[in-house]
Image 1: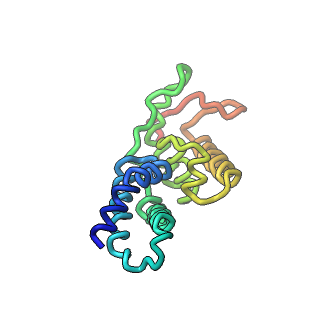
Image 2 (image 1 turned 45 degrees about the horizontal axis):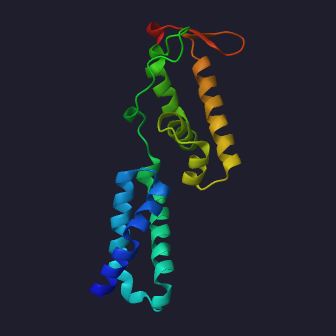
Image 3 (image 1 turned 180 degrees about the vertical axis):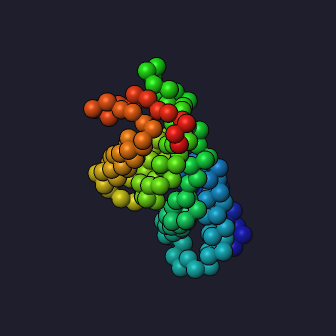
Length: 178
């Protein structure tokens, strides 16, 4: 049995790691999942009935482990305080004054909208990557991100200490009124 595991390691080690990294996009998490996959292989090798199906069996374990990773609640819960907010977006308006206000408004969003904003804006996920992460369609993801941005904009513009023009462009923000 040790020889089989060793052979699997030699044949599939690097290939599996790159497969996982392609799905996860985070080296440390990919390494953890890679290790977890080989632990599962080691503990379940006795369940494999046909050695001719070894590679597909290993990849099925890998895919299931990746899916399990995305289902973990801790992955979906992201603290907004872990991200650096932009200091300045434009020469016309000092967005750094809005940092605390934006953080508070993002915290008030629903879990789905908050996740969409945080992952696309601060973790720089593309909307296609977000769709894969959420396991929903690309068009559904685009709608969710657009809706989250719209809700956040409305919440920010409804603050009494925020001034904007008719198009919704921020003109001024008074920190003292918060």
